[in-house]
Each structure stands twice: as structure tokens, then as C-alpha cells.
Amino acid sequence: MEGISMRKKISVVVPCYNEEDNVKPMADKLTEIMQGLDYDYEIIFTDNCSKDATRQHLRELAAADSHIKVLMNNRNYGAGGRSGHNTGKYCSGDIYIHIACDFQEPPELIPEFVKYWEEGYKVVAGQKIASEEGKVKYFLRSLFYRIINLFSDIPQYAHMSGLLLVDREVLDEWVKTDDDIILRNAIADMGYQVKLIQYVQKKRRSGKSSYNVWRYLTFALNSMINTSTTPLRLMTILGFAMSIISFIIGVVYLIMKLTMWYYFPTGSAPTLIGMLFLGSVQLLFMGILGEYIGVILRKVSNQPGVIVGEKLNFEEETSEEKEEQEEKDGVL
Image 1: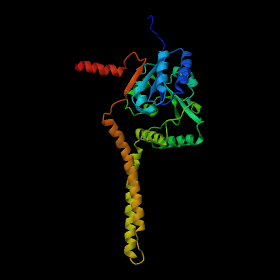
Image 2: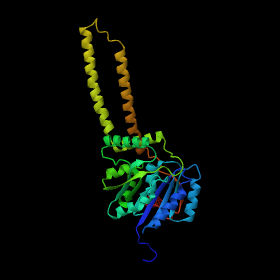
Image 3: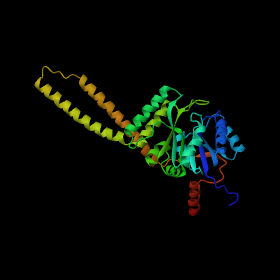
């Protein structure tokens, strides 16, 4: 058939937020790499409502090259969760590649990732063995993965980075899941064989990361809640054990007071210490329960999906948009 390319297609997804100094160099680098591969390609930048000149640069890039497509979200939905999930629905490639816009993950590894996909791997992921961003941060990340693997119902891949390739089959399975399921966590649950490519993470090329301590903590909690019910089991076991211990201590105090009435003043200190200890444990348990209830609330409250305010170089509707339009037409 003339005019129709029979080549496989690669969709490269680049989330960005306040990356005005990085989007053009990243677009140039990815274009150079893609043109060196025997594949059709699209580069999709998803902007999460940047406050700098990022959006203007993206408009210029899309106007100059039809391979570069842009989704501009109405607000910041987060790169890994809802926003990334929504972007996956717009990908038309046989291969989905995710890479951050800050150059911490080397784009030069993409041809190697594609080579392993050609060998039959449906998931190829970057794995950091060290980081130029600092030993403290890397240590904290290592500690995070140890805790996640300790509690998770399914073993997670440690230090899986923002450079990730998945087959179309894997992408389709992921976009069927809830919007807040991160792809890295979903991969472990899906059970596909994963090829890990190790590398040393570089420093940011330009700008400052939007992630602070609070956002890292939120990400860690969401990852734990979405991958494990072990904390709930531990609460039950610990609560049962503490009930037994408290009962034994109460019986011992009663016996000692009855047998040594004049020589064993109980005082208020043990009572206050016990109350403070039990109160702190109860608050901890309530916090854990609150996290799980929050997840349930988000799933049942039917919140609006990611709203894309502007789309550039997208000629066709997504399959989901077509289905919604067909349903509307059927009603009318």
C-alpha cells in the first residue's frame, strides 16, 4: 500500500514542569536519536501547567516538527500518576518510552533499550546503581525501596528510574488500571520479564527539581498503600499483642498492690506513660487507616480525569475519546 509506512512506531513520552531550559535540548536530542533508528516515531511532551516559558517553547517545537506533539494540562496532575496515565492513552506507537526532561537519565541509552525489545523483552527499565545528585538522597531512596519490598505483597524493582520502555501490550494493560497506579508499580504486579539496564544517574542539566521532601514523602506513602495491605495486618497483630501485654501488666499491678498494699504505691507516672504510649499508637494506626480510606475515597468519588487544555499535532482522537463520542451519538 503506497503512502502508508509499515515501520514499527516508537512513542517517546516526556513529562515536564518548569523546564524552559531543557525542553528544546531534549527535543533536539530525542529527534537525533529517533532519526538514527529504523522506526517511525512521535515525541509527546506533557506539560503540567508550567509557570515559566516552557509552554511557549513547546508551541514553537510543535510548529517546527510534526513528530513533536504536546499535551498541556489544565493543572499539575503529577508526572507519574494521573498525568502519565492520561498521556499513555494518546500514544500510538508499538513501543512506549518514558524519559524525564531534566537529562538525569541519559537519552543515549534508548537505542540499547529498543535492541532488547527487539530481542523479545516487553519491559526494559533503567536502574540507578549510583547518583551524582548526592549520596544522602541515594541512601534515602535505597532505604525507601527496602521498606517497600519489606511491606509490599509483590517484590518491587529497586531504583527503577524514570527511563522506561514497555511494549504496546503492557501499555494497554496499564491504561486499564486506576489513574493513580504508577507504571513502575504496575509492572511488578503484571509479572512481565524485565530487563534492567544499569547506569549512574547524572545531575540535572538545568533548573531545579519540583520535588521537595513533602512530595517525596507523598510518593513513598502512595507507593506503599497501592502495593501492600501489610500495614493493615501489622496493625491487627500489634493491636492484639498490645492488648494481651496490657492485660498482663494490669493483672501484675493488681496482685502487687493487693499483696503489698502499704509498700507498693502505684503513683501516676506509670498510668501517664501507658496512656501516652497507647495514645500515640492509636494515632499512628488512625493515620494508616486514613491513608487507605483516602485511596478508597478517590476511587469511589468519581473525580474528573486529567483535563488537557491544549493539544498540538494530534490529528486523531484517542480510542477513549472515540468511544465517548460514540456513546453520546447513541444517546442523541
